Amino acid sequence: MSIDRYTTLACAMQPPHVLLVTLNRPDVRNAFNTLMGRELLDLWTRLAEDAGEARCVVITGAGEQAFCAGADLKERNGMPEEAWRRQHELFERAFWALGDLPLPVIAAVNGPAYAGGLELALMCDFIYAARSARFALTEVSLGIMPGAGGTQNLPRAVGERRAKEIILTARPFGAEEAHHWGMVNRLCEPGEVVAAALDTAAVIARNAPLAVRQAKKSMRYGTQMDIGTAYRFEVEAYNRLVDTEDRREGIRAFNEKRKPDFKGR
Image (cartoon, rainbow, N blue to C red; front, side, top):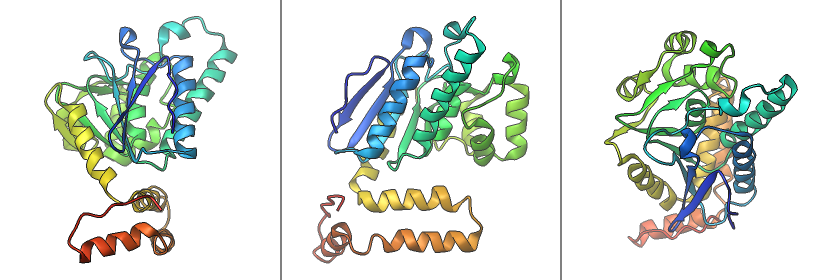
């Protein structure tokens, strides 16, 4: 895949198979504007169509001031209602495209993740965070509510009662709390979170890419089903891997006592 030069995103392949995506508006704490929404939607759509050499994605924020402050409220100041609705539709589609992305995505939260910034992190498969990071869903303090998956993804991460407290109070909380509640997988020292996420992404990328995608799909959709249907869904996902070159390569490599060379076929 050839990645175009975006205005609000910095994309760089970390050889051989990890794509690092950086929200690149540090002057406004990496807040979403309309252009960033369009560019994120374009990126996730293109990766879903043809990921090229990418097998895992890490997303972070530029600078040390923030991961993402949410929507750019300066751009929204005085925005007509119809324009607001159109912009939010764009944001919704960008977030849903991220949630549906076949590739695993790790959020490397290097600073505060507020409102849509936290919702973006929650759309990822898991989160690494700097110990100094702060989180909040502040929408109800602004007369709106989370509208990019926050009311659905946060309860699944921390439990319904905890999520109600977080969303209805709009109070910030720290990385230590987020880790204790299970929302964050790993805490890192400031300045080390991206490297840690890239290391984990490299481990994922060394595994069979078709198997990784099928496993992600089984977990994402199976957890929304009754358990019997989910078991059947898992087996269908498994069976699609049996007649693949990667499956045959994995068995050969095991018996030949060498590392497998997976091709995604």
